[in-house]
Length: 412
Image (cartoon, rainbow, N blue to C red; front, side, top):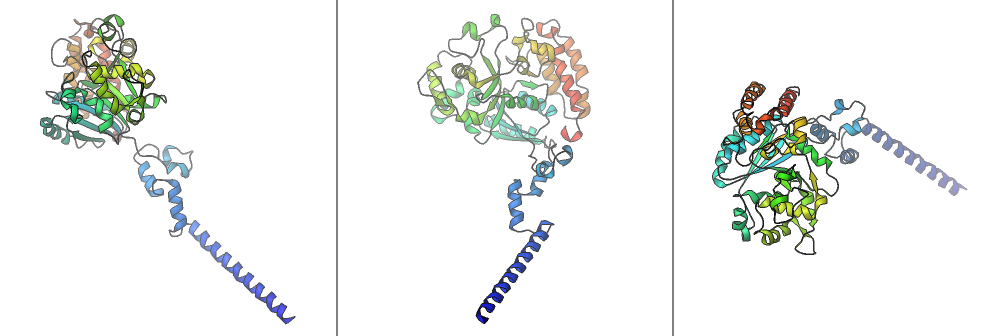
C-alpha cells in the first residue's frame, strides 16, 4: 500500500513541476510580446515582413509617397512594407559631334522628371571627359545618376556593325545584352527633346500585355508619304513601319524571348538573331538598325506595343501639312529633330525649341520664363508648314512647366 502511495505522490510532484514550468514559459513569452528584447521570435517577424524588419521597411518607404500617413485606412502590417521609389533607366548613344545635342536632351529629361533617373551613356572614348565635366556639375540634382560606357560590338563583326547606317547607331541593338542587370529601359536618339515628364512614357510599360516586349511609334501616319510602304526592299512592321528613335523596352522579356524569323524554322533569341539578320538583308536595308528592328517585329507583331506619334514627333508629321492628330489635340510630348533640323534653317520651329532648351538652366526662374520668348520665336516660323502649327510645340511644354511648380519642392 505504501508503495502505491509513493507512486501517487511522485506523480503529483512531477505534474506540479510541469505546471510551474509551463507558467514560467508563458510569462516569458508575454513579456517578449509586450516589447521585450530580441531573439528568435523577433527575427522570425522581421523575415515575414520582408526587407529586414520594421526599421528597414520604414526607411525604404520614407523615400516615396506610400508611408503610413499616405494611407490612413491601412494597418501597419501593410504600410511598413512600402517599396523604394522606382528608378527609371534612360540610354543614349553619342558619337561624333553629338555632345551638345545629347546634353540638351538630358537637360530636357531632367527638368521635368519626377522619379529618380539612371542614365546610361554609350559614347566614343574622346567624348567621355567632356560628358563627365558637364554632368558632374549637375551633382546638385539629387535624383540623377549616370554611367558612361565605351562603344562595343561583338568582336568578330565589330567593324561591320559600326559602319551600319550612322557611326555607332546600331549600338542600341545590343543594349539588352550589355545591360544585363537592367530590367526595363527607354532608349532615345541624341536629337530627342522631352516636353513632358519622362515618367509618363515610362508608365507605358505597365500597359504592355503579356507578349509585348518593346514600344515604338509608327514611321508615318500618312501612307501617301510613307517611306517603307513605297520603297522598302525588306519586311517591315504594320502599314508604314516603325521609327526606333524612341524605343521603350522590357529587356528581361527581350532576353528571354525566342523570335520567329525567315532564316530558319527554329526560333532564335535576341543575341542569336541579329548577325544572321544582317547577313541576309545588308544589301537591302537603308536605315540600318531601324530596318532590322522592323524586320524582327514584322515576324513577331504580337511583341510590339505601338504608341501614338506625339511621343515621337518628327518633321515628317508637319513638313507637308499636319498629319499627327494626337499632337494637334494634346500637343507634342517628345520632339524628334532628325535630319539635323536643330542645326539648319530647314525647320525653324524645331530649331527654336532646341535653342530654348539648350540655353535653359535648371534654375526655377529660368524655366518659368522659357515660354514667352519661345512663343515669339515660333511665331516667326509661320511661313513654314511646321511653323503654322507652332502652338502644338508649346501646348504640352506649357502644361509641364505649370505642373512642375505645383509639385512639392522635393519632387522637382
